[in-house]
Image (cartoon, rainbow, N blue to C red; front, side, top):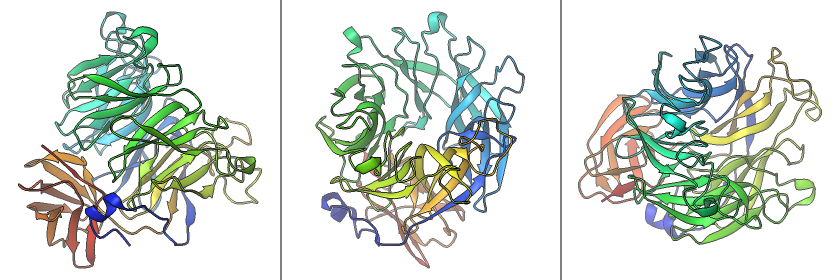
Length: 480
C-alpha cells in the first residue's frame, strides 16, 4: 500500500513489499527491429514504450516502439545513407518533451567528424537532426554524447558530451526544441581536471531547480558528483577516491531529498557501490557490491538507480548474482539491499529462453511494473555474437508487487506550469491535487492528463482520484 502522505514519507524508512516477484521476457530483438538495446524503454504519453538499440536496423542502431503485448516495431533506423551517417549512429536513450515529440542523441555520426547528433522524432518515426556536434572549430561545442537528454522546467533540453569542449574533457549543454545549442560548461578547466572529466550519465533536475550529474573520471581520477545552475555555474559536491567508489553513473533524488547513485567500480571489493549523497555533499556508502559469497549480491552496476513508487531504490548490476550474469536489486534508503532477480545465459537457464547481462538499469511503468533490457539473450538468431553471447537482446518486465501510480513529467515546476501526468485508466478521473491543493486539468486520453500547478501548491504527492481509487505520485517539487 502506498504511503498516506508526503509528510509521512519524508521521515519514514522504507521497507520491502512482501509480495511474490515475477520475471518475464516480454520481447526478443531479431536484428531487423534492433539489437543490443541500451537504456530501458520509456513510457510514452500514449501508454506505449519507446527505446533505442545500439545495433540492428541498418546496422547502426534504431528507435523502437513496444506495446504492452510485447510487439516490437522499428520506428527509425540510423545511418540510412551509409557510410556517411549524417543522421547519426548509435542512439542512446529518449526523452518525450512537452510538445509530445521524442528527443535523443547519437554517440557518433552527424555532419561533422563523426561526433554525434541531437535528434527529434515524432511517434510515427519521422526524424529530424537538430544539431551535429563538432560544428565549431576544435569541437568546442563537444563531441560524443553518451547520455539521454532531460527536459528541464524551463522547457529546454539539457545533456552532456563525454569528450570535446574547450579542454577536451566533455561539456554540459542546453538546446532548444528548435535546435539552438549553447555550451554551459567545459570540464577539465581546473588543474588536474579537479572539476571532473567525461560525463557519461543523464543529468537530473532536483527539487531546488538545479541540475545534478556525475563525471566518470577527474578529481582524483575516480569521478565526481556536481551541482549546476540552469545557466551553467558548477560546484563539485564530491570527488570519489576509489575506496568509496569509482566511475559514478547517474543520480536519482529520493523522497527524502537526498541523492542516490551507483559506482561501477571501487568500494571494498572493487565491485562497485550504492551511495547516498546529501544536497550539502556528504556521502554515505549504502552497499558495497560483491560483499556476499561468490558476489551473489551482484557486481559492477553500469548505470544509476531509479526511485520506485514505494520510495525504495531499484537498479541492476551487469555481472554477479547466483548465475553470474548480473542482478536486479532493491535497496532501502537506509541501506538494506535485496536481490530480486539473477540473470542467466544459455549455460545456466535449464532450457528456458535465456536473458543475459542487463544493460542500463530499469524503468517503472505506471502500472507499477519495472521494465528493462538485456544486451544479449532472447530468441533472436540473426545476430553474430557467438554463444554464450548469443541473441540480439530482450525487453523484460519485473513485477515486485507494487500497485499503479501516476508519474508527472517533468517532476518539478512553478505555479502555473503545465504538467503531463502519465498513468492508466485515467479517463474517468474526477479530481487532481498537488499535495492537497486542487488543480485544474484536462483529460487527454486514458493514459495522459494535462494539469496546471495550482496557486498555493507545495511540494509533495500528486493525487489523482478515479472511480477505482486514488493514484499517487512520488514527490513533485514546486519551484519558487
